[in-house]
Length: 98
Image 1: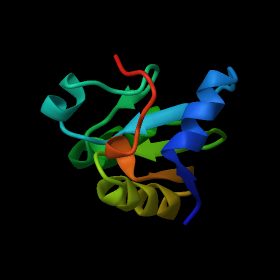
Image 2 (image 1 turned 45 degrees about the vertical axis):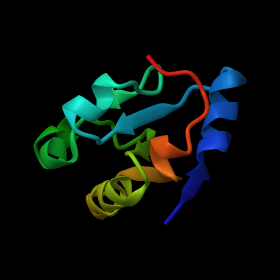
Image 3 (image 1 turned 90 degrees about the vertical axis):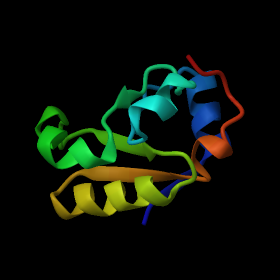
Image 4 (image 1 turned 135 degrees about the vertical axis):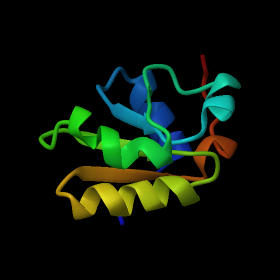
């Protein structure tokens, strides 16, 4: 499993790198704040919405602690997507949220 820490993802955003972040938390969790620019697709809907994603792009998967994003990673990878799991999830996130 390819992984980035929350700090690595934050540094990428700070440096202006283009990143594609998928937040797989539930609606009420995302309402408390998400990484700016992240696309919200709850884990339970990922199977039905994965057609919205581009297989030529790389996606960083995010959840609360890293467990659900790990499941999302395994699911998307098995369907040919290029994914990375953000370890520690939003519990480890120290950057800005919106």
